[in-house]
Image 1: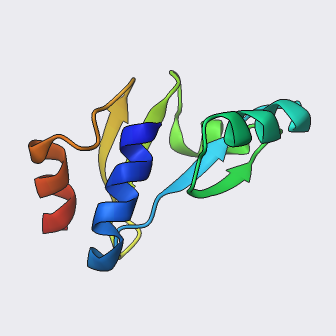
Image 2: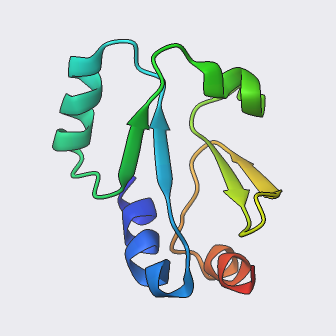
Length: 94
């Protein structure tokens, strides 16, 4: 999560927006996680887990890179170092 927050901060001026979706059923657990991990991102809660079926999510965390036209360009499964050069280069090129 820290590298995701850092990547958002560094690439925001290039049009990159991170939306973190939580599928926690427990709203208190969701709010506590956001607070404890200093998640300074746009977050939404999907307790009905509709996003899982919409995007085919099968492992957490999963990340979908969606371009300006709404097209899914890449899917990452598992943890990612969002500050890695190859990742930031990919995002900057979209």
